[in-house]
Amino acid sequence: DAQDLARDAALADAGDAKLVGEFVSVEFDDEGRIASYLFEAHLPAYKGWRWAVTVAKVDSDSDATVCDVVVLPGPDSLLAPDWIPYVDRLAPGDVGVGDIVPSSIDDARLVPGFAALPADEDLDATQIWELGLGRPRVMSIEGRDQASKRWYTGDRGPESDIAKASPKPCASCGFFLGISGSLRGAFGVCANAISPEDGRVVSVDHGCGAHSEATF
Image: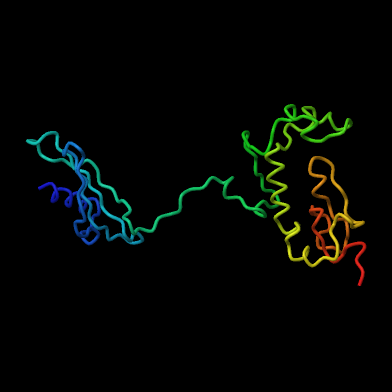
């Protein structure tokens, strides 16, 4: 019968009777002319996989013929994880010396320089030349919003342990350098050589023990 035909096809493909196990199930198409027979596959490194043999008949009077023999995963098979595009796999710190990570044309964090308005970039008159004449793209409102949230909720925001233990906030520190642009009201750069935040962007309400006005 068709099941025996399917098993023989699996045995022929396997080349070893030990690799083809018990019958598992059969599935028919809507017209009942095409059937897929499943048999346990005893293949090294393919635990839980199954031989899948497709058998077809032209009509009820014709003989069944084998269409295909493949090995398919079962419900308990060990499978590789779904492929994730590299841009979604990258994490902070992954980019090293010599690595190139091109940004996509449709990156929502960027907009063409000519499309940005002075109000968006909060530029003064001497900087307006960059709009379309310098950088091809500048950060979009969405990009700046993502950056500000990431910085503010990170280790250099107000909720970090070092900030909670600091005597005063960065905004009142003499080593706090303000930045220009639309984020200047929320962030600046630390310039204290003995601070763990030296050379890094910090929120105005961040802080550390190296505050310029700290006292014992």
